[in-house]
Length: 533
Image 1: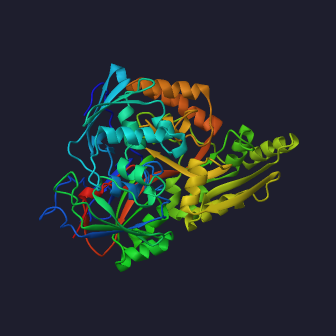
Image 2 (image 1 turned 180 degrees about the vertical axis):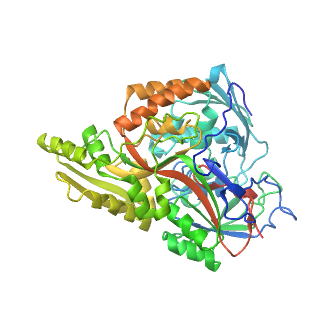
Image 3 (image 1 turned 30 degrees about the vertical axis):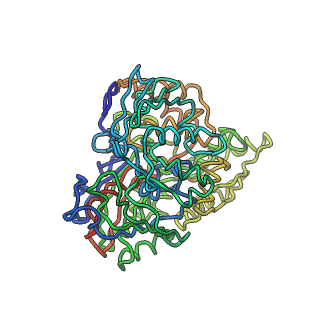
């Protein structure tokens, strides 16, 4: 695949011991975490287009399908984008290696300062134009345009590009990064047709053109996105499905009932209660724990949470374990997160534990803030799903009876939440999640002062230095030492507070047998290899 990078085995979480940033499942398997089988991606008998029609029930509508606004995440349009654009690379959790999809390889030279991205030959977008090195250069330079306000702007910043030939793009980095291919897979994996983007830059996200296994047939907002097979897909034996329909259904009970009644084939979820209810209903579930987890993140560069006492007071009021039992059911207690890295991770620092509830100490901090003229009043922003509302209302209830604190709540639909919290970074405290396998590039993006996904405004020079050193090396012991510094800073500085383990799950309905499912990141689907029998 590439040179100058020692591969590491993936980090596995404590409970399930399966894929951390991806999972594979087959409908013929039972509801057993250990029964999951990896898809080999082989074509279904009869060749491409003979694998039926798939209906996926998604949590929320996306505001658009565009490499500039769709992240490689199921919570921000990634599911739709993966079907339409495909990905250049994805991370295989079984090996921890970056695997090619639209691209053939990513190769480093000059100590990781220069990379060559080799594309597959003769790949075309569905408008007939080539997905070549010029197209890739256009897409990555588009992220760098401030007017575009791309979610990948920071990841693409200061990269320099040179088209070597139609299938090779030379990328020069501002600093050596032997893990750059992981950044590409996580932040820069989607590529759209330059011709279509230039023709209608404002309308492209509603009429996206990619080189993925499917193309848009129709899109009725908040009802259904219907995709039809791309007959010119680069792999002539795929896709296996004739069509994919993605239907937004916010209510988790309704999604489950739809699976049971045959109105849908598949749901991917990070809701633990939904997983347990699916098992009780006899549905096939594939489930994998991950590193990282669900969190309250604080805007540390503006009041009131620019004061570390405010962040710590909030955390000491809360009991994550009790919240998990109340919101997720009795089994939720087992989901309580103590260390941000999984206990089985080679990088975990077991002494870096999240603070435990201590309301007496919290009240002292609140009184100090009030005496300084800064009584703690803030708004907690989350999405408008029933589960998110229940969680926010639980946190709010814990503040009652405490003095000098007032917590307000703000519930936004999926697109409004993404715009305000993820893009504009306009919040005081917000619900979020961060799941990862190898710490690179997720922790760098999340915690580096100029990181691509640093929404908290967190700035700690010692953490920056540790993240730089961890990024610059392939020595596992050195990486472990640097990530220990980062973990201690997380629990001391509290730019966020994590309370529930992260996971990804795929729940299959009773209408047909879904085969070849391979998920990556937090539940995205490699659509080219899925079939329904």
